[in-house]
Structures are given as C-alpha cells and as structure tokens.
Image 1 (tube, rainbow, N blue to C red):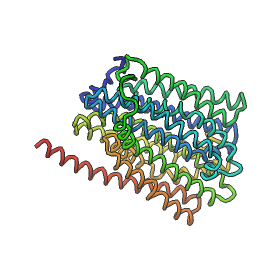
Image 2: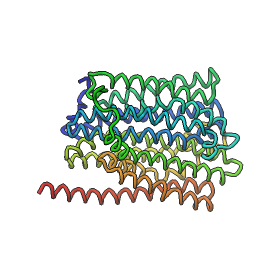
Image 3: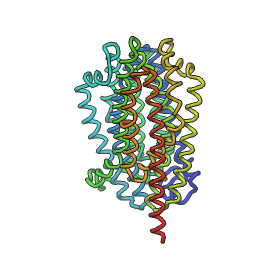
Image 4: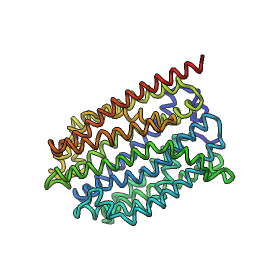
Length: 459
C-alpha cells in the first residue's frame, strides 16, 4: 500500500489531532498557496503584459469561472467527504465505488457544461458585465478554459479524492505540478509568443493536463490504497445521490458567488462613472488578493475534512470537536494576517498588478474598506466546511446562502446608492460580519444538540 508515510486512513482515528492536521493540512495549504500565487502571478503577467483593460476583462470572467468550479466541486467535495466516511466505517469497496463514480460524473459534467457555455459565451459574458472594451479579453480567455474543462474536472475531482483516501502529499505534488507548469509557460506564451490573455489560459490548461496525468496514474495503480477497479460500480444511483447531496453546499456557494459578482460588477460599472471598467479591474485585484488568504483557509479545511469525516463516521465525537476548535483558531490567524497586510500596504499590493495610477488608487481604497472585517472570515469558512465534512450539507448550504444572497445582495442594492463605489466595498464587509455571527450561533446550537445526543447514547 504505497501511501504517504503515517497518513493511512486508520491513523485518522488514533493519532493526535495536531499531528494529523499537520500531515493533512500542510500539504493542502502548500497546494492552495501555490494555486493562489499562480492566480496572482498570472494576473500580474496579464496586467503588465497585456494592459489594465485586460485585468478588467479577466475580472468579468470571475462569475463564469465560479460556475465552472461549481459544477466540479459538486462532485469533488461530495465524493471526498463520503469516501472519508466510508473509510471510517472500514467499507473499502464502497470507497472504491466513489472513485469510479466521481470519474464518470466529472466527464459528464465537463462535456455538458463546457459545451453549452461555449455555445452562448458572448451573451453570458455581456450578462456578467462585459462591455465593448472588455469582452474581447474575456472571450479569448474563457474559450480556452472551456475547451479544457474535461481535463480540469478530472484533475480537481480525483485530486480531492487522493487527499481524502490518505495521500495528502501526493495531492500536494499534483497541485504544485499544475502550478509549476503554468507559471513556466505563462510568461513564454504572453511575452515571448505574444499570445496575450489567451496564452495565460493555454498555460493554465497545460498545467492541469500534466497534473491530471499524474492523478490518473495514481488511481490506475494497484499499489494505491483505493484505486480504479473494473468490477466495482461506475454509475451507482445511491452514491451519486449522496455525492450531490453533500456537494450541493460548495456548488451553491460557487453559484451564489457567481450571482454576487454580477451584482458587484454592475454596481461598480454604475457608480464608477467614467472609471467603471477600471473599478471592475480594481475588484479583480482585490478578489485575487482575497482569494490568496481564503485559499489558505480552504487548505486547512481540506486537511480537516478527512479527519472530521473519518472520526464522525467512527463516532469519535471528542476528536471531531478538537479538530474543529484547532481549525477555527488557524483560520482566524490566517485571515487576520491578510487584514494586517492589506491595511498596512494597500499601495504595494496594488502596484504588483498594474502601473496604471487610477487603477492603483481605486484598488487601494477598496482594500482599506473591504478588509476591515476580514479577520472574521476565517472562522466563518471553517464552520461552514465543518458541517459539510460531517455530512450535514443543509447547514453548510444555509450558511453559504445567507451570507451571499440574504446579506450581501440586498446590501449591494442599497448601500452603493448613498456611498458609490465605497458602498460596494462596505457591503462586502458588512455581509462578512453578519455571516460570522450567524455561523457562530448555528455552531453553538448544533454542538449543544450533538453533545446531548452523545450523552444520551453513552448513558
């Protein structure tokens, strides 16, 4: 069983939580940081190699990119969670069925979603806020990304399963491989070959192709603890239903993010006056920076997921609570670091992406306002993913929907009317603070309920 040293599924129920979090979260964090750095570096290449309007065009693609990710995480996260629970129940055959089903679903989703989106790409981009100045860049970038969706989906879907089935270091290597190939090829395609924003997209797909081959080889190898088995089930209704049920939370989160970005882009275009496109570009810079820290927190939650899922499946409730408690502290520390950096050095961060003085000024002010409530975001993300990891997707969905739909969208409609572009940034801050308090209330209520249940079972 050629597994990562000291990370066999059985160890999830016996080793110390701190040690397990290091073993599982550190590789995931490294992979997340690498991915985030790639996104930042890619944006820097586009901003400096193509221009400020290309940054705005890239920002227009964010809602569509969220949709692309949504249909992938629907499978990837659901599959990873239930495979961990099956392993906690020592049901190896069912965990293998999950791997087979996830592969088939990734192929189906990528072909259907990618094909339909390509047919209606321009109308979709205009709906998301594209203008005549930005749509050439957005169109050129997304065409390449959509052609590569089968590669992206298989890579992301199986990489999540690789981590969940006891191979966090190999999952990290595949992510680093994707980023490494990407970062090497992007400047060649953009600056040397003069392919512009399309070159950045081609580099992305090339990186994911290299990682996809690596991941497929892992699951094809019989030496892997969980691997493809021809005789196991490849399309099972009960497994697919569970994958969708648990994966629905991150799916809806990404769909909501898509809807929210549409409102954000529209508000920035409406209240940014003549600098509306640049305001959208500033949001692109802020979004990339935000996602750098958020992705690190996601790395922590990815490391927590197999620990939570296994111990919840094995009825080891105290280990579940310990994992959650440590995860919250780590998540808050990460987003607090993001708050400190962006509040102290907003100009420095903005200047990484562009030399346009107007764009830098808009981004600087956005950083100062938006990141005020950012320390609380780490806690909210960990709590939301906790419910998802222990097989309670409805609560995770509830927290996701309230933050983005019930809180943020109404605020985006009301506050910018009085404060303009500043009101857009302030709306995002206010929704984060409100979501934090709701998440804490939900968590305390559910923990108290579960503690009573466990006490009655013990009695």
